[in-house]
Amino acid sequence: MEKFRSELTKFIDGLYEGDKKVLVHGEGRIGARLMLIGEAPGEQETLQGRPFVGKAGKNLDEFLELVGIDRSELYVSNAVKFRPTRISEAGRIVNRPPTQEEIRLFLPWLKREIGMVGPECVVTLGNVPLKALCDRRVTIGEVHGRFIDCEGLRVYPMYHPASMIYNPALREVYRADVERLAQWLRVSEK
Image (cartoon, rainbow, N blue to C red; front, side):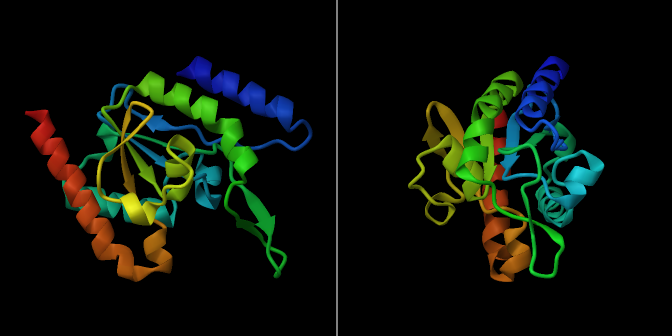
């Protein structure tokens, strides 16, 4: 995994010479049954160098704990490995969605990472990783909470944990999706 991280860092440094991007690599257990893939790191993730440690990460941890899924048994990553930003009207640096070019740039690296982890199931958190790995026309609202096949990968799409920050009505939907995932883990383990 270290060789992979080193190669990715060199690749990105070569593309963004003079504009150093802070990469946030995936973390977790190689051989994990579940690999969670988010959109891209945010401010806290970039500062700490770890995926899902900001507000969205706290939401994710809360739901995993609620249904008895131990984060230390997972592998967690993002479709895009650096924080996409823009300048707000107030002059602050804020997150923005990754561009299609950024998603395409990281897709071969993401697929390689999935291959190295070798999960039984990839959980996509939000539309960005779902569309990166599956058909671009599919949306999270259509397929969340059920298993789908994406080019031979078992994928379980879920809303992004940050979605509950902006739309609290999704809490119950998110909880039900996490509970179904936990149930599948218990049943498939036997």
